[in-house]
Length: 119
Image (cartoon, rainbow, N blue to C red):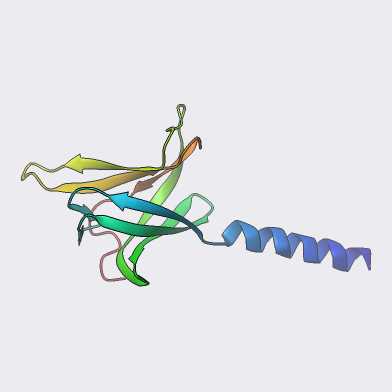
């Protein structure tokens, strides 16, 4: 009986660790996520972390707008806000390179452009 309880507890913890997380975000300027254009608006950022890998989906009105894969990285100084960090390309376009979470010492650094295109 004790063994069954321990097994159930381990399964519950594992299921919780793999559960998808989500955040509501507002994007204020046209940008790209993994080569996929994203216009300004309100979105839901859904991410699932397995080990040090994160699968990220940006949704709006229940539709997937963009997907990407990234690495979960520990940082020294956490951001005070949930935010997307953009990089500006030589042609003036912008793309998201990092997702920061308010007061958390982990961020998701997105893999290079095109890494999850077509998913």
